[in-house]
Image 1 (cartoon, rainbow, N blue to C red):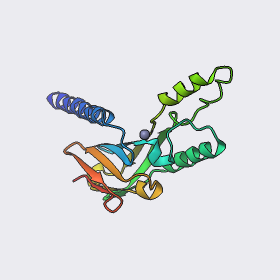
Image 2 (cartoon, rainbow, N blue to C red):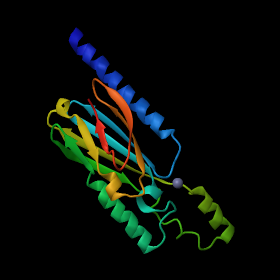
Image 3 (cartoon, rainbow, N blue to C red):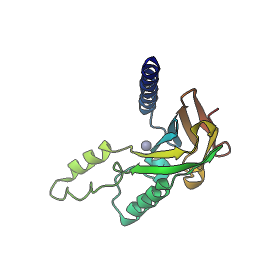
Length: 188
Ligand SMILES: [Zn+2]
């Protein structure tokens, strides 16, 4: 009985820590060239969240209006849906991947034809910066054996110059900056 409540306490503590990390990340400034990765490993489940200015991934941040821009976004989404992570120490297989492109994909230009041009320019100033986010869930065969994660995002998206990573496991947490020539997160 005592054992069980201790575990429950630890589980609540763990979840609070993860949301505290996520909150800190969200408050950070939107800086072109910089992306953030938040990782949480609990037993077999690894959750990864990528947050990036859209400019890093597609080269622009306004709502796509031309077919070419929409195609660029679709291509980026396809790349993001197949996770760019490799795992060292154990096997992790992808369970879920979602990509949020709503800030750049839409029909913002289609419904203003009966308004004057002043409204148009107001609309543009609204959306001067946009983010793209992706969330992943993996199941790792023996989570304790996962000692590092390599990130291939730099190759896929040359617009990403550095990635701030924040990670937490049951026993440790850390933060480090990744670069194209230093793209591995050590968890142990
Ligand atoms: Zn921006």
